[in-house]
Length: 195
Image (cartoon, rainbow, N blue to C red; front, side, top):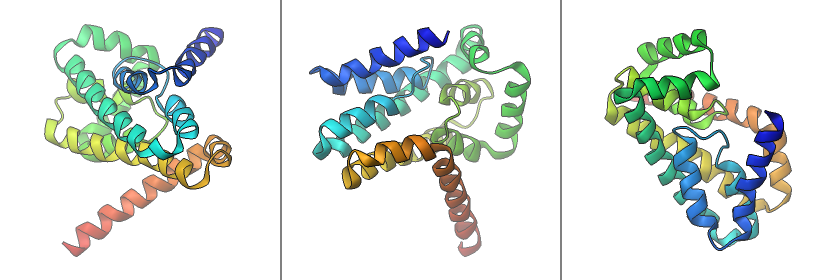
């Protein structure tokens, strides 16, 4: 399995060296949000490093693709559960799925927003959101904000700091994710008490 994933990873990266890097990034972002195992960040980082001035264009392409893929995952979960279940339980165990269900019941938008930014496979949440009939507007807004924040943060860091930031992102990705979640929660708390 590890060998297979490594080959898949290399196959994804090879698109950066072709004229089809941008369409490949878009399709990868669509696929990753609904069924594919390799996150689009790997290709996004390589493209941003190779063409620094287009970093924000790549982040936008990645965001749009990811949100559209999330909508596809939502559709799969809502209308094609037998297919969705096969995809979902390839990534998580049934008891994890039940925990995700609890998150959706309690925190709808929070669950989607946090999942959109974290290393948790996003397809787990998109398919589950459809299955649990999460409000689609809430799903769409939370997906757009969280996925956009994730991809534009990567693009901004690479635009500002260039190649050295790639190692920093790789090394501290989980820590950066937790920091983002804390800032997101703080933002919602401030909004709640100010409004």
